[in-house]
Length: 205
Length: 201
Ligand SMILES: [Zn+2]
Image 1 (tube, chains in turn purple, brown):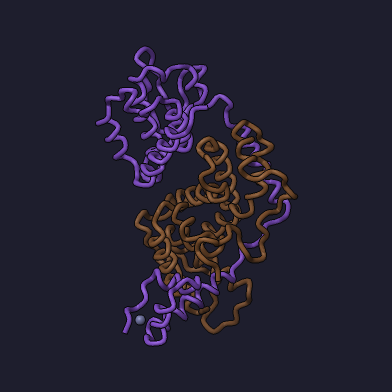
Image 2 (tube, chains in turn orange, cyan):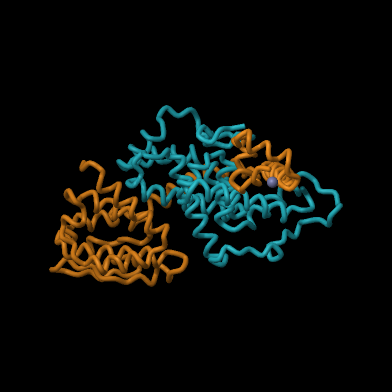
């Protein structure tokens, strides 16, 4: 007798993607046949449940709310203070990464509230106290306030790096970076890594 | 039945994939324009994808107002992150990824990290006694409540795979896991639904 179906194979079965020789097992095993019936029935029940259709007036409201939120997001966000050249001195970059890691941690469910974010960005000459997502510097207001901003900023930052990425810039505080990275969840690390990777690979525009 | 690699990205049921008027530009062109600051182009993207995003969110939280908030949040995050979208995935897949992350964040703020769900604690008060007549609307509400009671990862896999017809690979990309894990999550989601819906199925 062939082995019983695995969970994967039951899913393949209802997808019509299970190999014929495996499907043949069902004819010889009452337990698997019963499970297959259950899976099909519960899937059919699940498929029968539609999402209630909202009022037609709801949909334009979605656009309006999104547009309002987009318009309210400051035009001079973090990109503005990137252009202040505050990040050019390489010594500051590692601290920025630390700050970003803090931001990501702070907005993650396990972390503290976003309003608790406070960090310092130094470029060797000046330093900015950043609290509650706002850089205390007139031209640099409304900085990183969410993990998304931070990740997008990392991508843009990395895209400005020369061949070789961070290493080529002589970022030396790697132990600190490792500690920062360790504070991220696996998903966040993956997202950050993928973003950096794709950004570094992106042709300069 | 569909083949994995050719699964269509949109619900095949009664809901249309878009309630937008005939749009001349494809998503990629609209994204390019939006990255350049064209909010009208982004508005077209919102119109085109708002229904499917709302439906993902609704199935996650089983609540209209919350789903509306999550939908808005998804698009605002997408706007902010447009620069990181490089066309390696379809915009629809990318926006699903954001929606799922937004939903998972919301859900994880409300439920224990362990993904343990006590079905008794989330019992649907509308659930009739066994044997009682159940009309179609009640039945659908019970199913939605049961989906809503699933552990978040199972919920994400089931919703994307079952209601949005994404391939297992696409779901895996969206939730950041393997195809095998997605299939296992779908299976366990169905097993949990079976328990939850015992009077129905
Ligand atoms: Zn068997």
